[in-house]
Image (cartoon, rainbow, N blue to C red; front, top):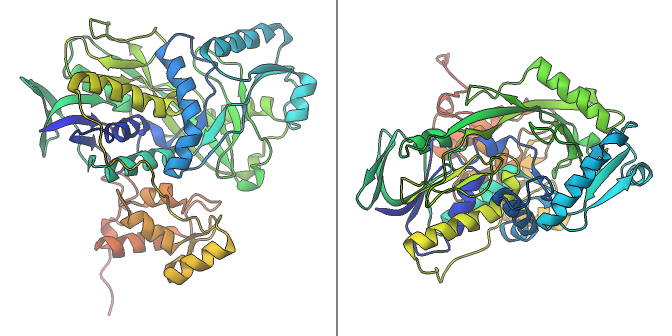
Length: 491
């Protein structure tokens, strides 16, 4: 029997797993995909929000500010990309400047540091390419940007190194309440546990409704994005938001930690929980609204588009004795009133990524109250990422190549990713087994040609290192084969 089973290996689930790995607990993570970070966590803005938007006093506001404060130290501890670049909320109508004041007051009440309102002149001096219609802005110097999959993978690897067991390809089919916990059925295997943590993203309502009569409903909210070539990454230095609406923080324009420019997302409620397709209309909306924030949107430099889904709670379970804290716009985090030992971590839409470090600590605190575990004496808090040959010094490159010549064999020319980096991605803790797994760990295929040249070689290396035929290698999911039919070789 496990002490704790976490359902879902997104950023919240992995952050919780890492915090629980500090404790003397037998912990496991069940993930229906073949890798961590396959859902909401892989396709978002990569923004670490300062914390001025959430309603003061809500759990969302508290976790946002705490998570943002923790992110820089965590990035150094776990070796993932993060930069505190600052953020701006742009106002395009002088009559709406009172809304900037309202956001400022929210942020100050929640403990956000250094926020202030900038005039048009101050704004232009900070961001010369800002759109001509912007009349003022709210400036938050503590806003940041992060690699979302780098963060999630780092949390997962460190959790696994500290004893957390990860099971992939395990979709939860049913949960049965037992005298001392729960029995989780994945179709092929069953797992028994004292505590369940439901961090299943857009499927968290379905997991919740397996055990609780307090009905929950999540509506997937799709957001479409455009990603631009690295030569445009210096167009802005801060993250540029627009005054938020009921559907979210609007279209943003931001640099990424990897040097690209990113615009988006749209906000469209849909019924399909796997509906990550993009649309002509959605991407046109991104381009048009981004043009308000910056003078020249470099449309010819788009290298790819993508969309992600946010888990928006449309029907909230009623709070009980164990209940859920916060308001209608808050996260749903807590023990289900009619299911002791079942902890929901649901509705983790924006700023869920920013909150992750604090969410992990908060939920671990709930588990401590239930199970009273001891602290682990041999917890290892650090993790080293994959060497990055594109950013390494000449001295470091020469050292790596001397140790392993594979680091001198460039596979992805756009991002200068070498075979050595790909081998590390495959053979390290929770190593990659799919092409997208390689992509998210090394950036092979994320450059201008979007894997047009390096993909066959990546498939070949994966097959060789995993002892499989190339026809068995998948892009990401169970049915995403690259080779469906293989012709017989001709003599």
